[in-house]
Image: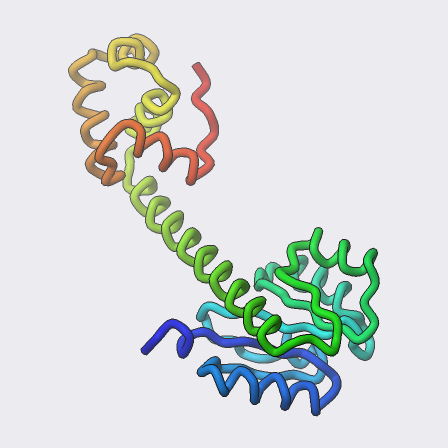
Amino acid sequence: MNAAATAVVFVIDDDAHVRASIQGLLKSVGLRSETFGTGQEFLRSKRPDTPSCLVLDVRLPGVNGLDFQRQLADAGVHIPIIFITGHGDIPMTVRAMKSGAVEFLTKPFRDQDLLDAIHQALDRDRASRQQQSDVAELRKCYDSLTAREREVMSLVVSGMLNKQIASELGTSEITVKIQRGHVMRKMQAESLAELVRMAAKLELPPSKK
């Protein structure tokens, strides 16, 4: 199955003709889509755990698209958004983009502009999901370390030498060397530089030297 087939584009617009038009366009380029008339319908739906993005009309009944963008963020729903509107203005565009929107398109827009924005949004979501997966894998490795190995790792990535770590922890240099080896093996790190990058990705607190 190709990447396009596994991704899904959600469309929220209260105009059934617009929903049908966008869905037809997406189908013509092999993209799956699901459409909704309101933001609440979208929130109630069971969404597949797959790369996705949201094409969102700014003028929605009840709550406007910009407020809905905030609701999604507050609910922990992180999905790239492409806004579409018939009455865009610069302050509205700025607010949407500052809140992380991928694009802000004013109707009528070219089909290609929408498709370009959708592909950009899906690429962004794929990258975000890959990053989350990588961090989850690193977290699993980190959780396998003993409390002392975590201390050693923290001191190693802070730039201390084995001798200094031994002094800091009140142990022997040979013990630190062994524990450091355990850390490298369990974290699957090939080098000190890689271990430092891993610690940064895990956002570990700096060692208290």
